[in-house]
Length: 502
Image (cartoon, rainbow, N blue to C red; front, side, top):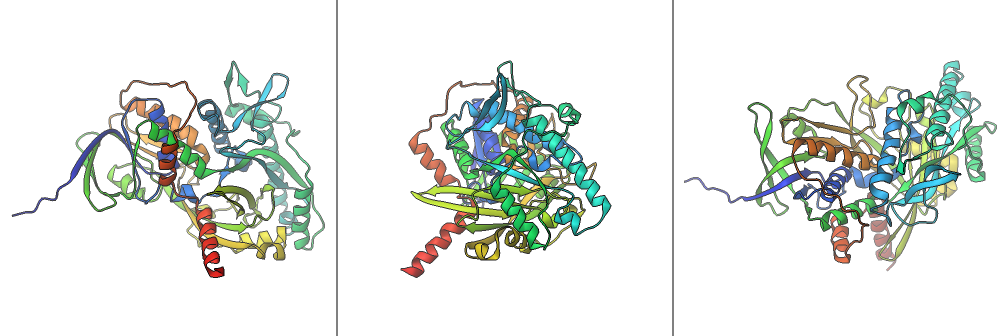
C-alpha cells in the first residue's frame, strides 16, 4: 500500500516568492493599498540575506549613469526618486528623509534633509570626472580616448544639471514631478551649478596622480544627490509596515515544484514546497509574484518566460575604521581607473560602527560585461593604495566579499541594462520581477501594484496616515531581516578578537 505524505494546504490572495528588497517592497506597497491577503516566501533563514544585503548601500539618483550613451537608466533613477518622494516620504515621514527643498524662490529640487536620521545619509556622493590631462588619458596617448572622455563629460554635466540643477522645478501643482527624457536630452548647455570645490577631494586626486609619477591633473567635481543608504533599515521599516497590515513572512522555504496548467495560457495551480523543518506544504493563490534573483532561471523555464538574464559578480572591500568621511566616485572611461568609496555609520545594540566600503562599479567602454570572469579585488586594493596610501589602508581591518546580482539584459543591445524588469501575461496568474538596482524599489513596488491591479480585480485602499509602528512589530521585523553582510563580517571579527583578548 502506497504511503501518502501529509501536506498542509494554504491559500492566500497573493504569494510573493523572494524576500529581498523587490519582494518586500511589493508586498508592503500592495498591503498598504489593498485588503488582499499576502504571503512572502524566502529560501534563506532571514530576509535580505542575498544580493539585497550584500550591496554597498549606494542610493542611485542617476549620477553613475549620466554619461551612458542611452539615458534610459539615468531616467529610471530620476523617476524612482519621484516615486520615493510621492509615495514614501509622507507616509514614512520619520524614516524617508528625502524631500523637496526650495533652492531659490518657488524653485524646488530634491535633497536629503540635513542632520536627519533615516534611510539616507546626508553626506552627498561627489562625482570625480577626470579631464584630458588625467592619468587614464596621459598613460594611453590615444586621441580617441580624449574625445570619448569629453563626450562623456558633456553628457554628465548636461543631464545632471537638467535633473538636479537650475533647469527643472520639481514642485508642480503641489506634486513632485521629475524631468522627462526629452528634457534631459534636450539641454545642451555645459554650465553646471552642481560643480564643486572641496579640499579633501583635491588631496585625494593629487595623491592618486602622484602615485603614477604624474603632475597634478584637473578634475570636474560634481556634488550629486547620490548618497549612502541604510539598506537594512529600509527593509526593516517596510517589513514592519507589511506585518502591521497582515502580511505573513515564511523563511527557510524550499520550493520543490510548480504545478502548472499548460492548456491555453499558463496558470499556476499550486506551489509545492517544504518548510524550514522539512514539512511539505501546498500553497495556492490568486496570483504568484516571482521576485527572485538567485535561482530565477528554473522558474523562467517552468513558466516559459522568454527573458535574457545575467548573473553579474562584483567585489566589495570593507575597511574598518573608515578611511575618510567623504563619499566619492571616480567616473572613468577606463575600467581600471573606476573607483568608489562609501562611508557607513551603523549602531547595533548601543555599539557604533563606522566603516568604508570600496568597490569599482563598472562604468566602462568595454565588452567585459557579457563575459564570465573571476572577481578580482586587486584593482580595488591598488586604487585604494593610490588614494589613501598603503600605511593608512593596511592599518585598518580589511575584508573582501563577492556580491552576485541577477540583472535584465536588453535583447536589442545584448548589454546589461541596470533597469527594473516586470513581465506578466493578461490571462495568466503570475508576475516576474527583477529590480535591477536596490534604489528602484519605489518604482518597482508601484509598477507591480499597477500590474497586479490589471491581473486580479480588487478594491483599492488608501490610508492617509503617518507610519507609527508598534514596538513588538518592530522587534519581529528586526528578527526577520538579516544584518547587512558588511556588518556581519565586522561584528563576527569583533567577537573573535574579543574572545582572543579575553
